[in-house]
Length: 69
Image (cartoon, rainbow, N blue to C red):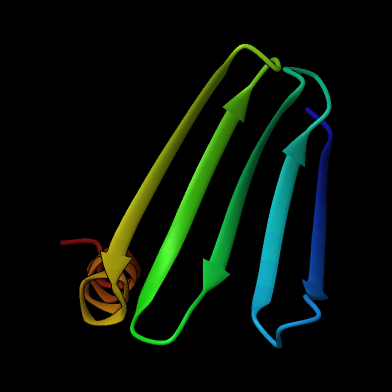
């Protein structure tokens, strides 16, 4: 598997992090906005899914994954 991690800042100041899987031709993007995180998944240029969750929930998910719970 071949992954490309990229962090960039948009003109409006929002931070965007993308992880591309070259093997599957898919990408997941995380964009931090004021009070929430947008997560966009694009799979083989066919299917796009967007989630918008509060930052607190995103942090809770991350913390739980780190602890292994």
